[in-house]
Image (tube, rainbow, N blue to C red; front, side, top):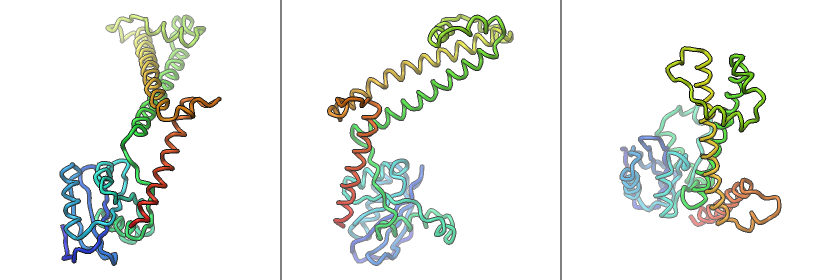
Length: 267
């Protein structure tokens, strides 16, 4: 860590976040760099960073990069003291002039927080809205994986040996899936082409059905959260739970943006 003496005045911090090690910088009331330091991304490391920043003076605000990912824990710590901001990465022309350096990035984050530039809405990771977001992300991935499994089944049926293709080609989707899932192929006969197709199709069908059940379970949980957060919205005609959940998240972001602006103006 590099450090210069300070007069206990108001200071502004900046943090370049990473997976294993955060890089922090502190600037004074005249936007001069007072010190930089590296801290582990553990809970103890985050508290040590806050203590280190306070050794320079009273912390006014802290610009943190990537508060939705690597900086989530750090943002939560500073949010309890009502002085975090999220800052975006520096302009590419500036980075080309200075070079790619974690210390420079931390200093730029501090300069941005000091000047109030490149600041965006702080991403929080708490409350039912976060629960809704996590469940929706999981559901989205499950739907995508289910679609890929069905596409693979349809592709394999087209290229399967004639005896299998004639058996399966005229079935409806659910008839096909249940038929394939109920097969009991000889797992020791994988060297035979027909048996290999049976093994592969059975595996894909079971995967599809398991994902289908998983999506249904997630829909129940998402429905319960939306019913609690926005009962008036889902009661409207032609508004489903998918649309209501998306509108609720956007509404929450707008409220957070208003609160964020209010806190920022108080500095």
